[in-house]
Amino acid sequence: MELPGKTVERLSQYRRILYDSIREGKNYIYSHELAKMMNLTSVQVRRDLMLIGYSGSQSKGYVIKDLVALIGKIIDSDQGQHIIIVGMGNLGRAITSYFAGKRDKLVIVAAFDNDLQKTDRIVAGIPCYHINKLREVVEAEKVSIAVLTVAPEATHDVAKKLMEAGVKGILNYTSVPLTVPPDVYLEEYDIVTSLEKLAYLVKS
Amino acid sequence: MELPGKTVERLSQYRRILYDSIREGKNYIYSHELAKMMNLTSVQVRRDLMLIGYSGSQSKGYVIKDLVALIGKIIDSDQGQHIIIVGMGNLGRAITSYFAGKRDKLVIVAAFDNDLQKTDRIVAGIPCYHINKLREVVEAEKVSIAVLTVAPEATHDVAKKLMEAGVKGILNYTSVPLTVPPDVYLEEYDIVTSLEKLAYLVKS
DNA sequence: CTTATATTGTGAAACAAATAGCAACACCAC
DNA sequence: GTGGTGTTGCTATTTGTTTCACAATATAAG
Image 1 (spheres, chains in turn orange, brown, green, blue):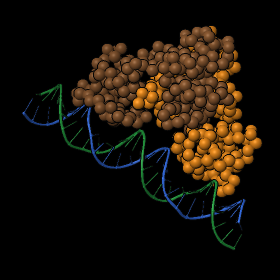
Image 2 (image 1 turned 60 degrees about the vertical axis):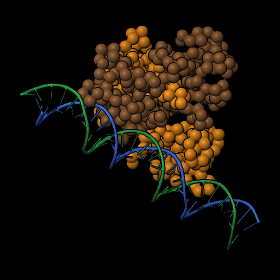
Image 3 (image 1 turned 90 degrees about the vertical axis):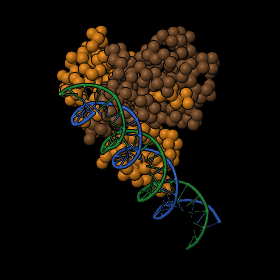
Image 4 (image 1 turned 120 degrees about the vertical axis):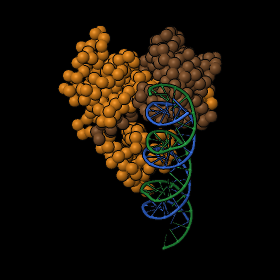
């Protein structure tokens, strides 16, 4: 099953909201309720759920627990996936502490930096190694995803090392656009670009 | 002129790359060179430039200086725009130090927090106020854009305050989806969602 | 039982974005 | 000059995503 990227993003967010609903004691939810909480239309919610083949009850809506389980089957891997943070500056630390323990199936297992002050220690709760141990750790820990928060000038070099070590997903927070082969997946979010886009929109 | 959102994002990135090229002493650039640096096709570059009405020379390519100037006319406001960071935790500080001085026409003028340890001081180079001074500062400094990095439970409340104070663009880095009226622009980037999307892609 | 209401599920239309294809043109080598 | 090459600019097409419109269905009320 080949899901549109946007749908996958929304599934992740549906799940988070549904966890909250479960915590509040809800068992069922209507498409328009979920839509309202996510600031989109009920049609879009139903379309997304149709794409993953989930059916609700026409009077009670969707069974939250079942839906969460199905989203889990789609997004999560049974054995979980291991993540590393490369570049333990402000942003790297922020992401690490923010994410810590948020998801069962996604675990940040290590961080890397080239600053000897930070390496071979626990930083923000996870072990931080020198960048030259990257390959070793990636292979030993079976790391599949890397978050890239290094300085711009190091980006290309580090990205190359990551791919050579076998990382298949890169979340690039640097301002340098990357090129990856087709078997590697890349998500890029640049703060300056986001702010400039807003500046353009606000201006008009 | 109504530009596609994706085109605006790319324009921001073209400009950054073009600055580098100028620094290297280049005066002209071909669509395929720019495309290669950004990991897209030359057709896409030319179409973006067509949309903003820029014409290059058929043999020498585009005049970098002129192109940068035109992108500036589209994205920047003459008088510049003022930005605030709301929530001076790890992420807020990371964004502040990362962005500081990166752009002439976009200036971070203040930060806000509810932690008295951080307020009424300079944090990461900018003045940090208590959140209850938000409206006052937004009006005094003519702030048009806010970066939201507060705790999830405070998100809705703070977003409401921002809009009441007259902020027209919100960059939401919290995990809580926001709803905004049509005259306010919103960009949302959630780390968990990005990682889960990668997890889905890597899995298959 | 019948009707009114609220919901899901989905084909079709509309919209947005990326890609392909090609004419027009400038330059170079000869 | 003339032909070859490499480039831009633009139209048409394809692809991906969202929205519309409505049939089907379950429930509740009369």
